[in-house]
Image: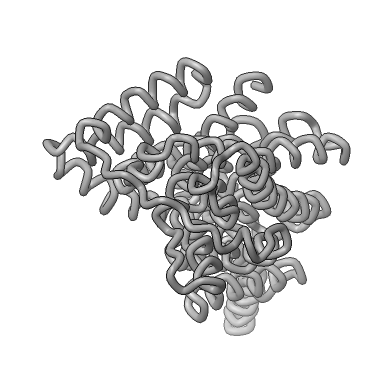
Length: 387
């Protein structure tokens, strides 16, 4: 009898153990999300679509969708006090995005924008996609704060999207972050058809004057003036804009090389790993798979297309007021979104398709870096009147 009781005890333990396994808690939603994570990793490795982002996010999706029995194990990202939950605080509280902006500032050369300041208007025009998506989301019965967080996807700026959604719509942050980074990675797929559709053969062949040489003093003064102008106008954008211009001053001052190298190297790498992994892990099937997420993905795609189109169409309109020899190639209008430097590379790539000698990269970098500033300003505006 004692032996039978012992085996019954072991069998009971085995049954209890099996209830804790992923196989016992697996749902169709978990399978769907695991396939999405594998797809992200595939895109990153096979086609090199933003691998520094998609591999951490894709693997994070796998981590977040390992099924488990919620019985106080403290392993899930939404379980208060778990390791993943603590790391996710950097996303939820908006700590990681400003640190990402510090690194972006330390690696960004604003020379193209300084040499041709009118290109900032192209970057500003591309932000129309944010406000257009905001209005469409309102028409789809999203609350104003949710609509603003969704609209920012059109800026093609993952850190800004995370920062704004953490303040205005934390319950939508996972879907917004995944949509923003997905469309950033798909810049080479989404933008070229829009650029070709909205330009004619003559416009694609426009050659722009070489940018003038920018002095070191101008590079040093720019982040200081940029900070004062943008943050006095939109104080609510201070966390992002302050860190962006601070990082740029570290780069351009010439006397803080170690700090600049740390900001654009080890620091941004560590934060990118933590941000990507935890954003991916936040897409647990039970929290993520719903009609709201699908609507967000649809609105995000629309916002991104509108932003690209707005940049191209603004250049075409602007050219009506510019003299021959000073006109801007509309193919750089797409680079007004904040996907640095990928959207500028797309301008270069599409331009070379029509003229092998027409190099647009340096010109496209102007509106591209302006787009970084513009998306942060747009986020500050939305945060200012909705918070």
